Image 1: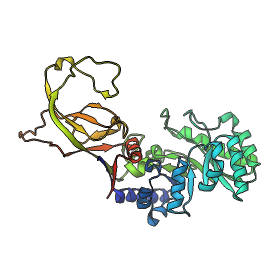
Image 2: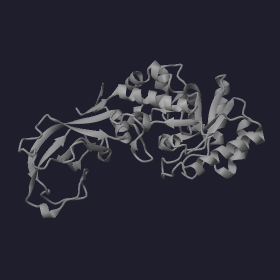
Image 3: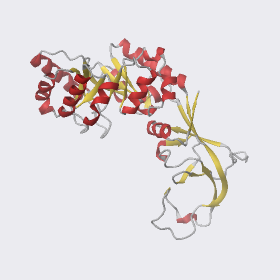
Image 4: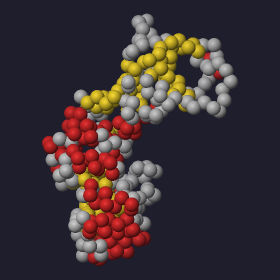
Length: 365
């Protein structure tokens, strides 16, 4: 079975380093655990007491994951990081201490659920700043807040935005400055103090380091940097965070010299995904290896072989075929044999999918 290798200590060290980085700047942050896919074993190994004390809250976008977070540590402060479905208002209030919201009808449902549970549910209202994902339209902000402030069991603790996730709109200084201006307007009109301006994510870290964001941005939601050591702004290592926390190893289950071009009539009924065929290679052969994972486990675009000489040939639901060329080193020695493993570097989406696959072994180191 193919294996996902997880370097738990490197991840914990990343979280501690980020915790110190934010503490030095008087910024609170939420560790976003979406990549864990709610895996309880993973959560237990990573979210130890010394790690949790470096984080202000733990966030996720799946109710099951929030339930598992509370199972691991009932006292853990949790945040639901996407607008919740109205039908799940009771569960959100039960498992999330804070939720991000953009729909008044849903907030009303959360208010009723909080009443029934004798709780005050805290929310951050998301504002649309151009990414065209979740967020209250800027023209509606004042009226929206006015209605929410009237709800008895809802405490508005801030406002926020989500940039860079769908269209890749960069969270630059001018965009984030809008958030700070809206906070000032809301505070002045309603005489309410909003604790958080939640405008930071992993993509914003390089800007924060260079003092390139407004000083009032005081809450970050961080996932990718903690687990992969990089910022999506430039896909480069952030500070001295570890970038090799995950490794994907697949087993060679067949190794043969085969033709480079398939033989027969190719129809639309094929279910695999293949590299482009060059008809100039008709009659030529190459050494091909079949690996024990497929499209159901992970998208091949999200894993990269450490051996740069390995080329993708094709993938089906449960197997991937690669081209090993001559399968010889420069000295003429055989490189790979049956039973050997080929090592890949997985990205964020790859790890999230691999953790969801029951056909992949998870090995914690």
